[in-house]
Length: 396
Image 1 (cartoon, helix red, strand yellow):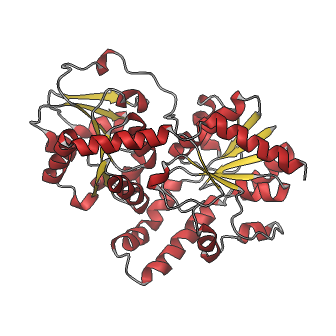
Image 2 (tube, one colour):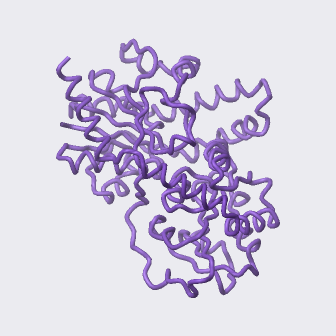
Image 3 (tube, helix red, strand yellow):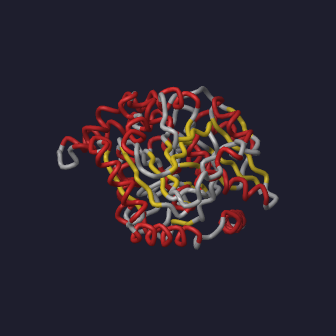
C-alpha cells in the first residue's frame, strides 16, 4: 500500500505525525512525505523519503500578520467583533495553507497513493484524497475541535472551507476527512465523534544527540526542573514573549537543579546564569524529561505531550489562543498550572513551581494523565487499522 503524508511547514506539527508515518513504513508500506522545500532536511533526517513541491511559505510571517486580530479575539472572547476577526484570520490561514495546492495535487495524481495522511494545516492532502477517491485521514497535533462531536457544523460555518474542493469539481459535504487521528489524551479534548481515532503519543523531537554526563544529577535528593521555550512564539511576538530569563530569576535561590533545553540563539539571550542552572544545546526533549520532576514551558502542544508522557507536573505560560486551549485543558486535569503570559510575573512563577514540586495532587494527576496516554493504541495498531480501511475502500 502507498501512503502519502502531507505536512505543513511547521516542524513541530511534523514531529507529532512522524511516528504514525514511520509505523506505516515499518509495516512494509511505501511512504512518501510531501511538503514545501524548506522541510526537506528535517523530513529526510527523520528517516522518511520526501517529495519537495511548490514554493516556501513562511507560516511565522503569516502569523505575525494575523497576530493583532488573534490577540483581540483572545483577550475579548465575549466581543461580537470576534466572529469577524476569526473569519478574517481563518481566511488568511486558508490561503497560506492552500498556496501549494496545485503541486500537491499533481504529485498525488502521479504517485497514486492508497491513503493520504495530512496534518490539520495541510488541507491539500485531503483535497487530493477526495479527488483520487482514497481515504483522507487528518492528524491532529494538539487541542482541536476536528473529529469532535458537532465539528461538522463548525466546518460548514467556516467561510470558504469547501472552496478548494469545489475548485476541483468536488462536491464535499460534512468532514472531508474519513477519520481524524488524535494523539492528545481524550480527557483533554472536546467529546469525540465516531470518526476520531486515538493514537498513543510517541515522542519524536527531531534528530539529535542524547545528553550524556552533562545531564547527570549533582544530588539525587535535589528536585530538578526543566525549562524550555518554543522558538516560534518568540519569532512571532518578539522578545517580550521570551520569558526564560524571567523564569530563571523567579526560581533563583530555590534549592533545585535547573536544566534548560534551548537552542544556541536562546542561550545567548539568557545572560549570566546561577550555578544551579545547566543549559543543553537543542537536545531531543523527551531524553531530558525522564530525569526531571517538573517542567516550565510556553504551552506548545508538543511540549505538553512530551511532559505528559514523562509524568511531569507542568507550568504552561501561554501567549496565544492555541497555547491557551491546551494549557487550560492541562490545568483543568489537575496535572499542571496555567498562567497567561501577562499574568506571569516572577512571584506567580515561583509560587507555581514550588506548588508543582510540593503538591501531591498534581503528581497524582500527572501520573493519571500519563497512564491515560499510555493506554491509547500504538501507532503500529492505528497504522494497521487505517491500512484495513484503505483496503476495504478499494473493494467498493
